[in-house]
Image 1 (cartoon, rainbow over the protein chains, first blue to last red):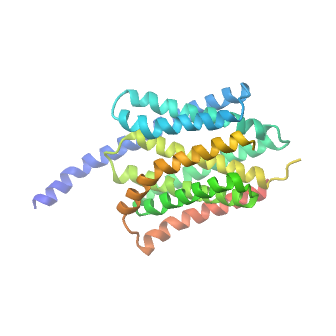
Image 2 (cartoon, rainbow over the protein chains, first blue to last red):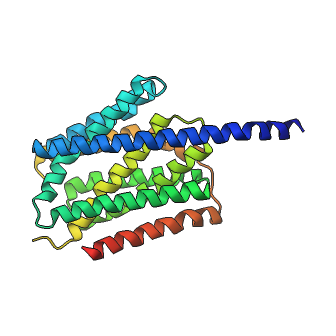
Image 3 (tube, rainbow over the protein chains, first blue to last red):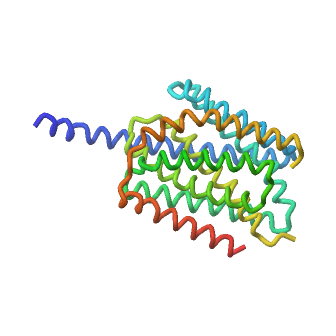
Length: 223
Length: 60
């Protein structure tokens, strides 16, 4: 009887914690997406060089792996999240400028952006409405990510276009899986940290956009 | 891609692999096993994503 009481007494509390986590994560995610759109626009107008992509992503990854976990439970964590997402947005400048120089570049960018939005909203909506637990995908997704990174590392020197496209296709599927995984984590780990959740979802969206852009750009009929 | 970009990209990916590897091992060990039905519930939306991406490619 006591265990029954514990379950029934904790359920509303857990539901409230879940709702709060989802609300906070999506609010912060939309704000960071807007902020990174601003930094990406600034980077496009400043016509930053290709090294900007590597340097910005390198610094953002270091912040995400080493600074954010230490500051995630304090107010400064919010600033770190904006620094990470701002740097990721800034990194997009050279990439967007390259596509904008193509005759159908704006169409490719628009399609990649719209496609990313549709995929993210559909998968997140699916995970939120079905409330299924996708935690079993964690091992598979991280292994896939490691394999994709090794393949990308090899392809820097091999420079095989077909392999590059295959990597982008695989990363799109992996990021879609990570969206399901992270969204279900918000439901089933109600006491998770919303700053970490936001960065995790943001990274999935960022990678999804970059690789969709690459795939659409490579397979379109450019003049 | 010029040589410095290649070296920079390789360094970035190499660093990410070094950082991710121990986390991946923990995640792989702690990840629960999914049933066939659970995998099906994840694969269906992922296949729909693949179909949607194909549709986008054809639309260009």
